[in-house]
Length: 336
Ligand code: SF4
Image (cartoon, rainbow, N blue to C red):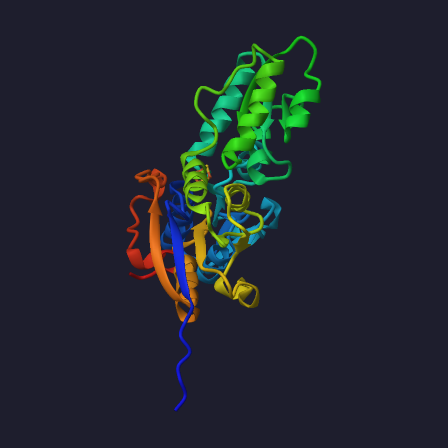
């Protein structure tokens, strides 16, 4: 008789909090509710959040993703267009108004707060330094709140030490919401050492979700053989979690979008796995990955809780008359 091979024991340290933040959840709800209220198609400028699974799920329901408002055909000028959670430059709503489009702005309220801080610095006569990554839609959106030349992007400590501010200008800074807490502290320190009178934003720019997810990974990483972060390659906060895991002691850390991307043949010998998810990664994929490990290992899940999150950002008033059933969000949250 064939002996069943015993599965290898595996401890999974599952981080909490992980995955969707209040801003991502709200942005997805806005698309879902707009589809319910106005029917398909609903246009979405840029990926509503940086996650292919989410984008494909919404596309199946009738969302059409575009990068430029000019892509909306004339016959669909009456259809809603939604701006993504990352925020948009001021020129985008202005363009929508010029084209007489009906738009819904799903910018996360915490990104809008950074916009307001940058505008405030500018109003008070300060040249604005934005700590962030070039090309990220949030950075493009924040820079686009102010006239050209009013903002200098700072990406590294080296740039903080060497850039030349406009002559005689006062300075104020803000940061992207999804940066590494530690790297940003180094850059801000370099700025403050060089410019004693630089003005900080009135409130911390890195958001609660970024901070909490990095803290949870840091807490769980020591002694971990492999740390998997569920998230997309273009998700800033997910990529930062991989770096945090490696720095905090994980032997290896990988970003994966689905269970099918896990390099099973390379990870046979692990005994402790860390698992978390970026703020735009749905819980249903975390469940898929847990199941994939349970199929292959004798797995025990230890939930490592480092913070409780109660943040909830309501959708705009114009969509509050549509009921959001749990089935409407089951494609990302699962049906449990
Ligand atoms: S990561 Fe932070 S800033 Fe970005 S959508 Fe989530 S809560 Fe908002």
